[in-house]
Image 1 (cartoon, one colour):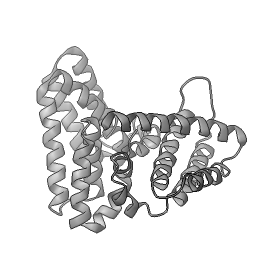
Image 2: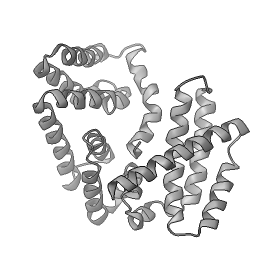
Image 3: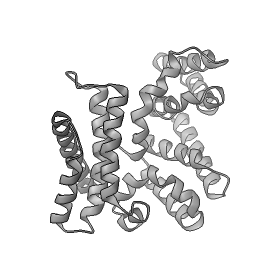
Image 4: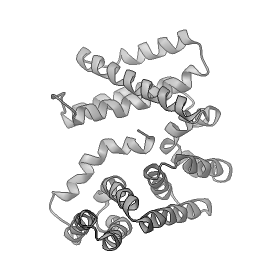
Length: 266
């Protein structure tokens, strides 16, 4: 799960745009996205690509609440289509490159970089995101500062720790902020641990990944004892005890997955 995936915690809320009272044009956007999925399943790939491109380029103009759907479910359908229909892959790459050109030419914004990052995530091309970010760091530091949260996960897991430390100067404070945000999210959305995979699990794993990233950065600059103390002080903030136990399990899983990913990339 990447930092673009922090936005995943909000996707279910964003997908309310598919059920609430529509703004003008919302019904068309919903129908065109659903049509794209149906066209992929029926094998009409050319028309499916037309519908997906329309949704990607116009959905936010119709309703900003499509933000999460546009960079998650829609990109997943686009990726799926690309595996069946090579022109869809070509179009995704072209769209990504246009976003990169806009960012590097000074014509982009946080939203443009977020699009770039999400597209690269679905193309499994996070190294391209990092290359663009490194150029931003050198050439447009203000924009790099605004976009850093989108790439911290990838920076840390690519062992770009010196650069990550610039944008995460206090990993311990970041860990504590993450668990506080997790508890607020669970309380605000009133989610509980039902049997089986759930929104509760998703929230735990998103924030466990954030804590794991911050801890890994801290471990590379401090002693093991200091890292253990920092983690213990962070976990002590998590209440009630049942939530703390669940979060500890999620953190163990995400750290094990991160270690496995690092070994495979070396």
